[in-house]
Length: 402
Image 1 (tube, rainbow, N blue to C red):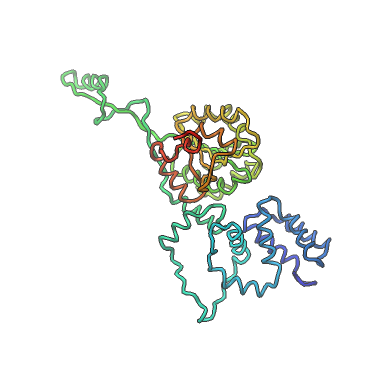
Image 2 (spheres, rainbow, N blue to C red):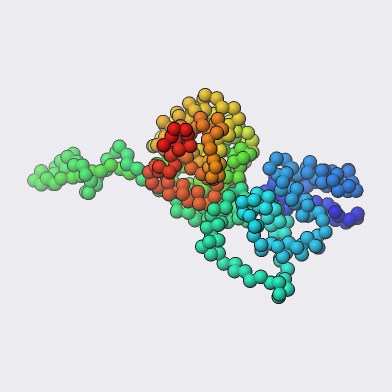
């Protein structure tokens, strides 16, 4: 706790900036409100001081744990804490699957991002190799996006930009001249013969034209899907810059078209910032059925032309499951070449299709895949460059399915 007459406002401002780096939504206005709140209640009692800051800074349920960890780390003896963290920062958590350890690591990096670790005595110094080994890279690619720190998220976005983007070509109904084609073209042969005066006749051949099908992405940006959708939008931006025709939409309680924002600039951060200004329902509830009905009615004819592949990114946790959910999803499937459902809940080994929304949606999709780390995005790139795979068959999660 800051001493009377000390730099209380400065410490609160630093604390607020650290919370923002750790992933919380803390702006300058919230910091000013926190300073005003502490001036009103005073700082005589620690719990009252903590309650005042929590009331100002915590806007979402998932931010409560981040705030709790940050408050306990920050508002104590600073010199002892900095010395301890300088020694502990290079040490990885014992259990990478423990979400509390991931939150503590993310908060620690945010609080001490600008601090240089103190050198330990020679007898206590650990020999660490900072170069990434193959094992380190595999661990990073397998790490859940939700468990990543701010620095790891930035690195993940950089790795996504380096992925080999899928460019699967499919045959169309149109034919083009091809000397190695498998179908004769008598009209082209007759025209060539007439140009030569009718004395010579050479067979001409043709083959079906090929094109890259467009990609349509519907991204759920509700509270449980926000982190995954933000990273996936970076993947869509990389796809747009590769030359592939894409259409990107976000939804929670309403549908928003962010296609132009992703195409507007080559800078992914600037493109995502432009898209965020268009979206007004980040971290809201989920209305999948209403969103699908709106898409089928207003956007399907324009965006699904040319045999588009549709990517539906959501956990399927619908607020209220109605019959129109399965009906509208089935309509979307019939209008597309492939409908791929990307669900981060599939990362759990014991996943079962018990939720009513998930059971209503599974029979209406062609493939069911996970989306929670870099490896899953790389697998998606491979899947988009090939035909349907049996391991992504959604029927395996339904009773009686093969």
